[in-house]
Length: 142
Image 1 (cartoon, rainbow, N blue to C red):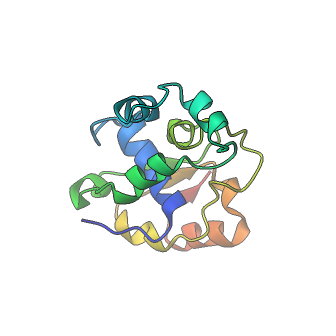
Image 2 (image 1 turned 135 degrees about the horizontal axis):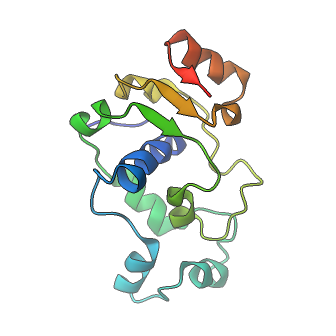
């Protein structure tokens, strides 16, 4: 199984595989996890009550950190979308407005895990240096 160096990059991959392609299952829902643990099943209320506004809920971080993604699934990724409205971000941080760097990708070292990646939508969020890394690998940076 692949090991990601950049948690936020992994979340973008999870967005594609779990919430768009629906090939990475089961689909994670923070509400379900909280309910299983005996907490409020309303993620927004849970985050508010636990002082987790504009932060990743620890239970979600733990889930996604330990989530294993097969090499076969990773090889199927041809496109990624970086957008503040991604479902994975809502599942991680139910109180988040996209106005800070909470989910910024710091490194593209994990590109080696995606041998067939051809395009990254929303790449303007990466900054010019990281976009140059994409271009150097022949990946379209839209």
